[in-house]
Length: 194
Image (cartoon, rainbow, N blue to C red; front, side, top):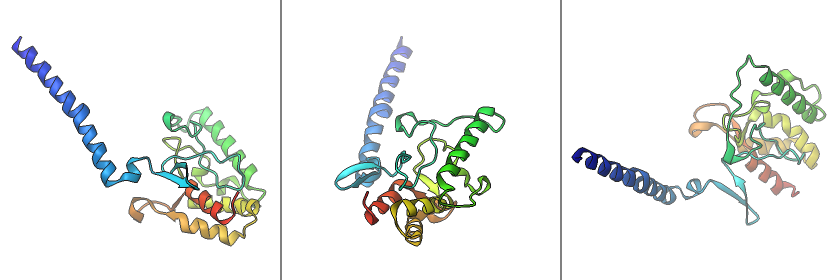
C-alpha cells in the first residue's frame, strides 16, 4: 500500500510540475523574450492581421501575386501533413505530373520556352507540413515574369523585390536562398495596390 501511495504522489507531483508549471513557465518566458514569434509571427497590413510568416497561404485566385508551394492540406494550419508517398507510387507520379502541368499553364505564357526540366522542385512538390511559407528564389524568379505583366510593373523592379526578400536559412549561413511569399506579396501591394 505504501508503494501505491508513493507512486500516486509521484504521478501527481510530476503531472503538476511537467504538465502545468513547466509549460506555463516556458510560454511566459517565450512571450517576454520573443513576443512576435511566441504569438505566431503574425503579419499586419493596413491595421489588419493578414497571415503569419510561418504559414503558407493560397494565392491561386490572384494572378498578380507570387504563388505558394502546392499543399495537400489546402494550407490549413490545423491539419498539417505531408503526402507520405514514395517515388515508386503511381499516385505521387500522377500528382507531380498534374502540378507540372498547372505550373507550365500558369507561367509559360509569361516565360516562353519554360520547360518541365527548368521548374524548381519546390514549385511542384509539397513540403513536409503542407503549409511552407517560402518558395525558392529560382521559383520566384520564374514567377516574376507573370507578376510583372499582371501588375504592370517593370520586370527589373519585381526582380529587385525578389532580391530584397530572398534570404538563406540558418542565420544566412546554409541552404539555398528562399523567399517568404506573404511578405513578398505585401511588398508588391506597397508598390502597386490591388
